[in-house]
Image 1 (tube, rainbow, N blue to C red):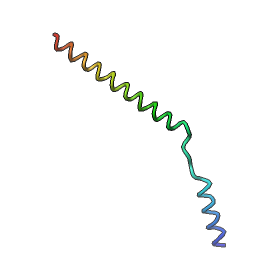
Image 2: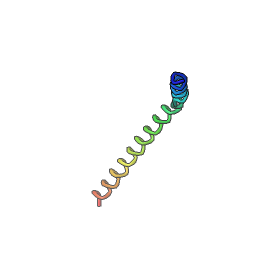
Image 3: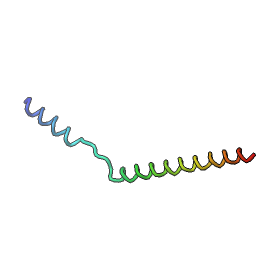
Image 4: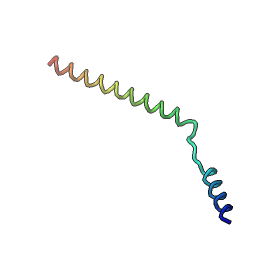
Amino acid sequence: MFKKILLLLITSILISCASLPDATATLTKDVINEGDAMHQLNISLVNELFNEKKRD
């Protein structure tokens, strides 16, 4: 009886393992690229503001 319960538990644990979708890697890269683009835009805007203040 104990062996059957143990086998059932092990089987259910193996069956219930979750996996990540294939699109996760692509989505992660896209989010990183978008974050980098936003960072560069922010730097450009700050530099433009600084240069404008310096001219005044």
